[in-house]
Image 1 (cartoon, rainbow, N blue to C red):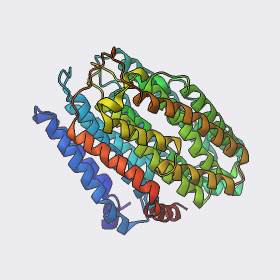
Image 2: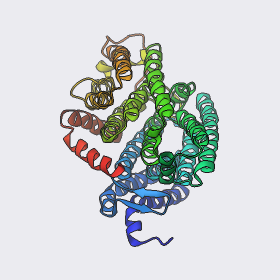
Image 3: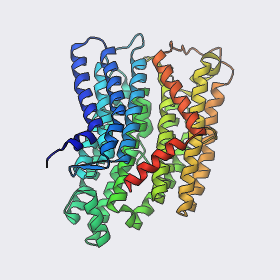
Image 4: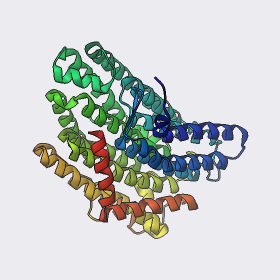
Length: 483
């Protein structure tokens, strides 16, 4: 198949990112300073973001049977690039503290590779591109989690992630093989023809079930969540921000595209299974989060609950659900990046000193008032409090669920949100409590770039919580492309 000029234009964001990876790799090899590859990574991500409108001119376009570049893919690519940009800034602030134990030039190559895997994932329309992108993302995340090799918990978390990634890939590949045995094709659209036309349903159903198990491990939803909090606790805060956002968001976007194109909603048993997974994730995630005393573990269990919320809209299906998931992911990205950004800025880096225990945040409002304010805004958004993006996002999810008459999941969503409010307010109350004079936690000096990034995230959180119309218009265009 010949690649045309229009194909290259559509692929421009991916090509820019690939070129950036090569340049950053060369800079890391020839430069002794970590600042050079970091700046080049930021420049490349900025150029990739700037190229999205150019790629939009050629969209929608099927580029080989593997990828489709449309409004849906470009929206999620934008989220991935922007989130990676923020993580690069927080990573430099985290690993450049005085006393860092090792050089971190290679970190930016791994961050860009993870972004590339996620970007290819959201544009995939074929199981081959799906698997290649997923493995690129998984291997990058494994290396990132283990990057603090002198920290025992980081190595433990990386090994656990490696086991989960291996299990996920095994289930996914077996499921793909069964679907291929029934459909004779690995393109999503070809599977839709089989779904609508009948055929060997037993292979298709078992294949779909295995796919759901593999994707469940990647998303970390119940009952595939057991090691997720350990991974969050062991990895460095900026890496956890990446794991919690782009890896989950890219997989959910891919899953949404597959279900729309391949007719996954035609299987009542699969939809029922997703419904119970959503209910279990909302209840277990919130209940377990309320029992934690470690901020990273609280946010880890919280992320499980948030994925359960998004699965409610996912089960509802239709254009409204696509919009609801897109807006919720946008709000979730901003809040999670901001929350882990605060944790990154308060940590001494390189595993030398952690600010993870809830007690370490006692009196933060009196020592770092604006950081406490930003963290409060992120937590209130995650709780779905009005005037934040989280409120609009959760309302969107409820509307999509009501439209599909999903009454039990909606009731569980409301109950879960009430439980979540308790542990979010617990963190906030700790930050604004009187300072413990016996506390020995020394706060590091703040990085200017990290503080600016956190300020931008806070402004986005509040601005789009009050005036979400521009994002909603963009999502409606992307939803029409996806449908």
